[in-house]
Amino acid sequence: MSVLSVNKNNFGVVQNSDKPVLLDFYADWCGPCRMVSPLVDEIAEENPQYLVGKINVDQEPELAQAFGVASIPMLVVMQDGKIVNQSVGARPKAQILDMLEG
Image 1 (tube, rainbow, N blue to C red):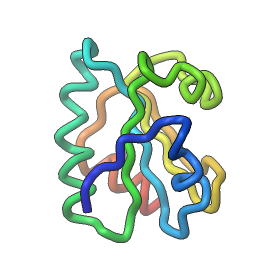
Image 2: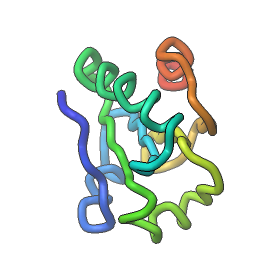
Image 3: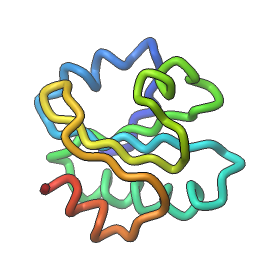
Image 4: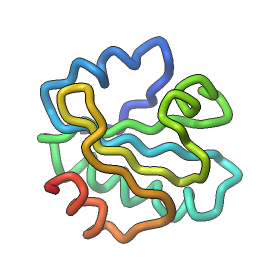
């Protein structure tokens, strides 16, 4: 499954997902974000049981503020519309998967 580009208009899909959700808050200018991005893409391709989305904090400041994003990259795991796990900074793929399987 491909990565969903999340914005305030389609955020309802994320909130109402039956699947666990992984959100990657990033910016194009952020070096560590560029390291995490291909890992998030791989997780989306290899794990159809998850909904994976990316949120550009520069284009979606309201969503970034709603999630309290102070540093990026920030990864958030949601289940049933609630945050169940989150981390800030670049993480290896195994740690990101551990967050999802938590």
